[in-house]
Amino acid sequence: MPLIEVTELTKRYGNRVAVDGVSFTVERGEIFGILGTNGAGKTTAVECLQGLRTADAGTISVLGLDPARDRDELRRRVGVQLQESRLPEKLRVREALELFASFYPHPADVDSLLRRLSLEAHERAYFGRLSGGLKQRVSIALALIGEPEVAILDELTTGLDPHARRDTWKLVEGVRDGGVTVLLVTHFMDEAERLCDRVAVFDAGRVVATGTPAELLGTTGKSTLDDAFVTLTGRD
Ligand SMILES: Nc1ncnc2c1ncn2[C@@H]1O[C@H](COP(=O)(O)OP(=O)(O)OP(=O)(O)O)[C@@H](O)[C@H]1O
Image (cartoon, rainbow, N blue to C red; front, side, top):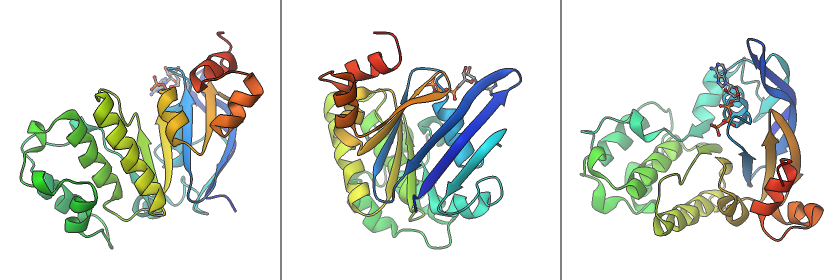
């Protein structure tokens, strides 16, 4: 049974259809990419998966649960990357982890998480003083603090330099290799090509393709996912 199963999901804002009959499945242990142009409906779909928005039609199963009904249980079992601006500047790295650990019944060990994300040297640093790459590492640590089965990472490497991006990619592979299923929302095709086991391409509220990056190159006859994406979203 897939870990996430979305069938014919539709979500409207007033008259505007943001997600229009979308279906996809995510298997346990994979990095699954949700790709799409701006306004394609990625965030809306992921918010429905978390139970933050109620679908107008269709069904969603996450870990066998219905997000609309079982939101509290899902919150304990699904880790979500915080937008960095949501953390107070004067919170120290260790304090942030300890604070978030207190929200969960069986949190990860703060020391081992600091080690795993190579944050030990920065544990006493104020969050507001960290570089973009380190802030991103803290936000990934916070997504993992509850020992989730699924981690949702949104626009993971926006604003990072090429070194910090590659470090972050390695880290996400490590998260997947540690047994956590990763849902990665991105519009960086190089990131998706490098990291994702499978992807769904969103365009104007619909899923226009799903498959491994190699499959999408095969069906479009292109040599990069960037070119394949442009073809699939109809603006070649
Ligand atoms: N709260 C809202 N009220 C009304 N319309 C909304 C709302 N949130 C999103 N939309 C609209 O729904 C559509 C899908 O938006 P959504 O944010 O899900 O797309 P996205 O793929 O995540 O885009 P981006 O990459 O720009 O974040 C867009 O047309 C957007 O303007």
